[in-house]
Each structure stands twice: as C-alpha cells, then as structure tokens.
Length: 120
Image (cartoon, rainbow, N blue to C red; front, side):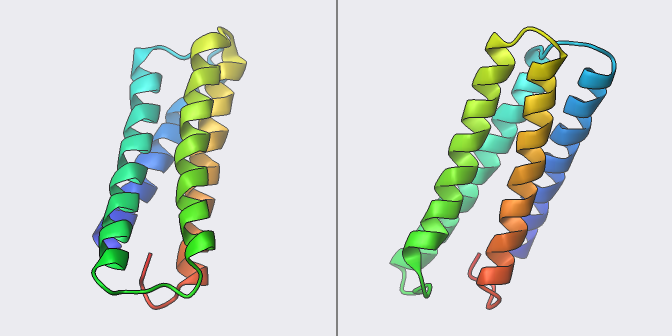
C-alpha cells in the first residue's frame, strides 16, 4: 500500500507543479494539464478500489464513513477541478487544478494520520 500512496503523492505533486506553471505563464488548461488531472482521478480511484477490496477481505477500518468520505471527496474534488479547468479558459482554471491536486495530497496525508496501521 505504501507504493501506491507514493504514486498518488507523486502524481498529485507533478500535476500541482504543472498547474502552477500554467498559471504563472498565464496559460489556460489544455489537454496536457487536463490529462494530468485525469491521471490524479485515476490513481485515487485505484487507491479507493484497493482499500475497498482490503475492507471486503476482512481488514476493517475503525470508521468506514470517514475513510470512504475522504476517498470520495478526493475523487469528486479532482473531477470538479477538472471541470472548472475545462470551462474557465483563463489562468484561474489552471490554478484551480493545481490547488485541487495539492489538497488531494493533504487528504492522503490525513488518511495516513487517521489510520496509522497502514490501512490507507
């Protein structure tokens, strides 16, 4: 699970850096940045699927509502940020994607703080 968490973190940080670069250069989100945001959504979906499978196999987290709430929030937030990036054709669309990717990293860090046994 640690390798998957590292992958999620790296993808989120690279996407955030790319989004901040686009915003600094006054560029709107193009297919590269939107593809990176899509990759963030994909790795969060994979993380959610792995955690769901682990939960179904008998590894019961202490509070399922909070765990799945974090996973759903991260996934929905990335999709929403990508939607803003598509429709906001200015630097602010790129900035939204960058901030969403950074918040996704914070959510992942909180998952590891809440479930220190490595469930997340």
